[in-house]
Image 1: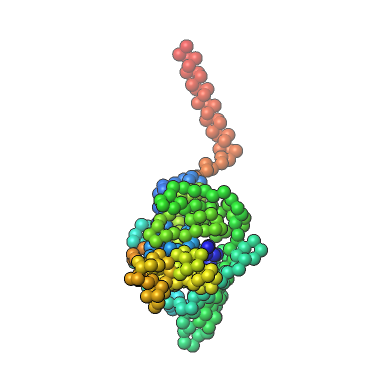
Image 2 (image 1 turned 135 degrees about the horizontal axis):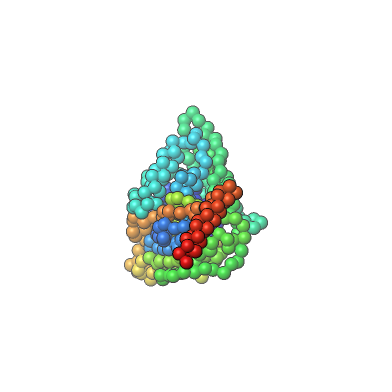
Length: 369
């Protein structure tokens, strides 16, 4: 069983905050380091990425999207896009809190997750098109009194088109499908995290690397507490201080579940997918102890789902707090300066000076002889 990853690609830009931060800590923790801290433009920068499943349930898929070398002066525009000023105050406050949060995170700080407005009824769906996957995301934003709040905007390089109308935000995201390249893999802990760079995709993409467990597009998941590590090297670009942002992607914590029975008993599932567990249903949690240990369950029916002393632990009740589904590093890129070309007059003057110096040296040598 594989969970469709397409709806998790909308993790950069305004949708990062809406779908990731506003849903709590998430189920995957991601950590990233990059080296060296200072590098010449075009020289390699190595990113080490680690994903950890903090849930008591297995999760699927497990992946991370990396966007590298964003100039610090353009970081806000990249993350939030060219947003109109006439947005609801809840959204404007949310944007400012996320901006401060990312500023601290990117320089190695450990800032608290900001409080963000709750956007109820968030929903997403995807379909496969000609060489791409098209996803639609919608959510409710409280409308202001005396305003119809009808605005449109684009982000993710115009791949995401969004509109806000009468308190409902809708976004359509287009995701190019990759070719079938050979995977590039690096060191691993428990599970390998394989990475594909942007040039290994058939069309232009809005990330520099996509790292995942398994073989794309059959992306796999992680068991409770399991980790995956990988590495990707990219040539530095730009000049000055730049930032690199990585975002973990998996099933939303409110949708994550475990199959109660059938052929996929005990495997991760998405509770919004009615066909996720052939011959059974997708439970909101996992049995701890009892006859059905490590199988799916619902808290309300845990006595029947986890007989003989078992309890049902909800997948959304993560065992450890303080982790983040995104991380950021900072690099200083030094641009190579090309020596300015000399004008013909300067070349002629330089030639005359060298000729005079050479003639003087030759006369002195002859005089000594």
